[in-house]
Amino acid sequence: MTVRTRIAPSPTGSPHIGTAYIALFNYAFARKNGGQFILRIEDTDQSRSTRESEQEILDALNWLGIPWDEGPDKGGPCGPYRQSERTAIYREHALSLVEKGKAYPCFCGEARLRELRRRQAEAGQDKLGYDGLCGGLDPAEAARRMRAGEPHVIRLRVPAEGECAFKDRFREEVRIPWNTIDHQVLLKSDGFPTYHLANVVDDHLMGITHVIRGEEWISSTPKHLLIYGAFGWTPPEFAHLPLLRNPDKSKLSKRKNPTSILYYRRAGYLPAALRNYLGLLAYSLPDGRERFSLDDMAATFDFSRVSLGGPIFDPQKLRAFNGAYIRGMAPGELMGECRKWMLNDDAWLKAISMAQPRLALLSDLVPMTAFLFSDRPGAAAADLAAACGGDAGLAAQRLKLAQWECEKSAAWNKDVARGIFDRIAGKENVKLKDLLRLFFLALSGAEVSLPIFDSMELLGRDMVVRRIQYALEALDAAGTPLKGKALKALSERYEAAYCAAQ
Image (cartoon, rainbow, N blue to C red):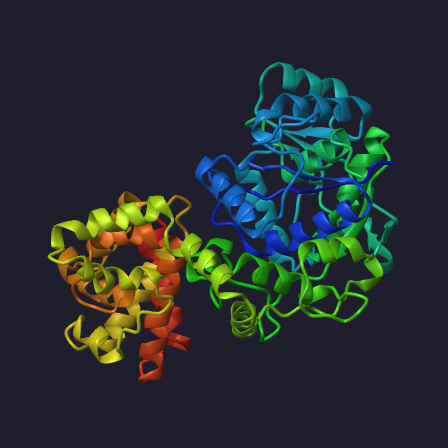
């Protein structure tokens, strides 16, 4: 048997540090066993998936130095490797499950489903979900309605009694009662599959032998095993890795610390240091060394050396770890890394083009563009407040609104950034010019800088969000925290004014 592992990220935002963490372990296990590591793009969420986000995933993994053997950019014998290009495959398989009685068409509209959820919530039911009504339809009647073109989804038929028991490489036998598993939608009314159907079909057709993923998928494994069984397929082995957590043990979240791989690239972290740190969070080499390469990890990889103790992703420890890497490099090697980081031709050309109309001396370029290369420009709380007429509370509110708006934007360029701040200015009834004073400070540390929306494009969404967070922290430290009731009130206003209308 040839070992084949995979990762299957969704291109719906900036590439997550958790994707790199999972990729690292999949790669190491495959290489240790002379197998292949596959990259598959799960872009079935057509409302949120973008090719820009897909490219960011490829760029991030390439920068980290985690190579794959097959994928959307490389091709391979099991392509295509984008789920949006495999919809006919999923529909064929979903219909075969209906024919076998393992799945059924559901014709319930959104109004009935809403009412069902409301009644279940009022009754205090622990499990909120579909009640299986259409599962009781006569098959001939269901087939007639499907042929007539009546809108429907296809749902998985789930046992009402008993339990699902399965093995996990990191745990004792896992047992989950079937009555806690919902009648999962497999194929949506638009013909696109849900994650659960596409995941199983692709893993089988691509010959995946080991599914190494985060432990948040343990509760979904019964659905996947049920689908494997319905097709008569042998499932892969499962290994659910412990989730990365914040230093306070909460689930890793961009609201607390940067979670984008691109942020760490932009901030000046070394790919080898970040890769090493991620591996070290849940893996130990036999000789106990903390510093090891990807090849070291792959050569020694053994599931028994994976720790399940809740790995803590601590940005401060990562910073110190990265610093140790930098100090241990030969000057010539470090110079090469600095060149790769600072002198990215495309980014540097954009920066020079922005600065050129303002230059009298070549040396003017350094102070003018320094903020583009700094992680923390250091805007003072008093200056941030002054940009809002001396009202620090108003400054904090505007910063937080902008942070929320930037975080939810999948695409990112200067036009997107301009649209976000035009929208905020309109909602907050403030002139754009007056609003932007605050953000010149937050992003560059000065009230006047290079064109702000061009700068936002160069910095990238994740760095923009992080610098806004630094500005909020500066206000907090100076006695203007945005917490508790004030934050809740702002959040409610944001939901009503910014989200409800969308």
